Amino acid sequence: MEFEYGNEILRTIILLAFFVVINLIIKNITRRFAKVSHLSEARTNLISKYIDIIIFILVSVGAIAIWSVKSEDIFNFVGATLTVIGVAFFAQWSILSNITSGIIMFFTFPFRIGHMIRIHDKDFPVEGQIEDIKTFHTILRTRDGEIVTYPNSLLLQKGVSIVPQKDEDSGV
Image (cartoon, rainbow, N blue to C red; front, side, top):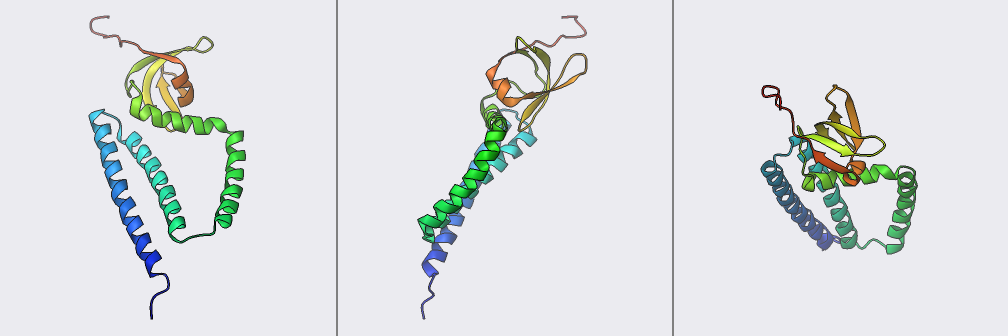
């Protein structure tokens, strides 16, 4: 007697093994990039979580294709889910833009934790040392010791310059 779903199970196992290997390779490349670029471990772990989410979505799509789920059922589920998510993101669209900005800053941001920066904003200019770069915002400490959280999406939109830090011994 032949097992009814043997091919689907085998294909699913191969799919999972393939994506586990791809996930490990991508994470290894990301960690090497972070090490060479001297990025913090916390930021590297955050990007690894994003990679896990993307891999999970791809595995789910592959499993749906392997198991031949009816397209009407998929479209109904995805349509209902996207409607709920769309309403939530429309109400808080800046959340998504801040997360995306955080990912872009991880790979291309020319400033690092510890740099003193000046944000050129005509309404609210900010100058401070970068203490941490989170998912949604960057934490700055001004020369007066004030803590400022600045949204990542605005940080990418505004002009930012590195301020040379004064050497207390030489007075420069």
